[in-house]
Structure formats: structure tokens, C-alpha cells
Image (cartoon, rainbow, N blue to C red):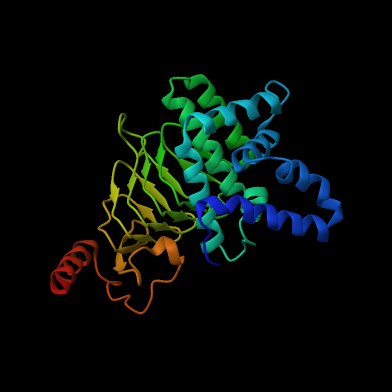
Length: 286
């Protein structure tokens, strides 16, 4: 589908929800409470997240007010929300427009909950940020430390069992599937988590460990364990991961192609020879 401008995403959501409420009367009340009675996307999202994350100790009204306050004080959060909605709507064939991820996709919900927690982490309210992290993990099975830095235009498809550590950095236009870990090696402190470049795609079940850089436009195959730097615009796979090919596009996150393509010419070599062949091929391209 074509992406709408930021200003029109909310109008598109309301149109979609109005249509669904008419077609499915059993959901009309829910859709009104979640979307149609709210004047803005921020108010709607605050309600949706708060009702999912509430518990007897901290109710939905308190959480809703905290989220609205974060959105009002940091407009960049809502800019990222709109970019994330556009990412899901254009990259996930299961998405029926913009309203489906807003209402039903827990990967989207987990990322937006993280954005609020990150806001409070940066504001020095670490106890609140960690509480939100805990609730997001319990409800959505997605554990993102509020200290991590995540850009906009990201899609966490399905997202169950995703783990992202405190010092991880994820740049814009990023996609990954479920059971991915951006973690530490377990033997170092400080800055210990991966740095993921723009346009990277990470397949289901992959583990990227340590303070390593995954270059712009790289692709990581499903089930891989990545322990070393990944050059830009390179596909890696395996345990441990090694280069196997080059992505077919500059930003694999945007096309979500899980295959290695026909240029799987590096498979079958030892790790040292693989890296050497990759360097030669890169030099020949230039």
C-alpha cells in the first residue's frame, strides 16, 4: 500500500475503524472506546497501551496520563509512532492498513511502550521506566531495556521473545522477526550490546551478541548467532554467522526478503577464506 503523510495517518485510521465498526457490530463498542472517541492518535494510543498494561497496583488512568504527558513533552515520540505505523503497513502483508497494527499487533505495542519508558529513563525517572519495561515484558513477551536507543520506521514482526539490551542502538528503517536477541556476551560490562545500522533486517531466532556493529543494509539469516562485525550490505548466516551473499536491495528491512538469493557464492568456505573472498569481491565491485 502507499504510505499516507503523517498528517493523514490519523484520518486513515479513523476511516478504517469506522468501516470495521459498521461491518462488525460486536466490535463497535471496542473500536469506539479505542479510537473513535479520541481526538488524536496520541490519545488513542495512550488508551490502548494503558488498558493493556494496567494492573491492580497501577491502573489504566495513571498509565494513560503518563503516556499522554510523554507524547506532549516529546513530539519526536509521535513522529516515530507514525513512521512505525507506516513501516508495518507497507512491509507486513498481514496488515490491513494502519488501524490493524495500532489495535492488534503486539510488536507495534511493545515498541511504543518502550518509547514511553525510554522517555522517562532519559528524564531520570528510572524506577518508572523499569516498571514499564517489566509490564511490557510480562504482557507482550518483549523485553526492551529503556536505556536502549531505537530509531523510527521500525517493524518487530510478531515480536514474541525479543530481547534488546541496555546499550543497544538500532537505527532507522529496521525490521526483525520474533525470538531475536540484541544482547551481551555475558562477560563484560559497560557498553556491551550491538549497534545496528539503518535498513538492517534480522531473521527469526537470530542472536547478535556483544558490542559489535552490524553495518547499514546488512541482512542476518534466521537462527544465526552473530559474534563479529557485519560489513554494510552483506548477508550473514550460520552458527557462528559468516558472510554468505549480498542482499538484493540496499535496505533489506524494507522488502523483507528472507532468502539468500542466487548469489549464494560464499557458502562452503572456512571463516577466514570467506572474509577474504568477501573483501576481494567488494574491491572488484568498486
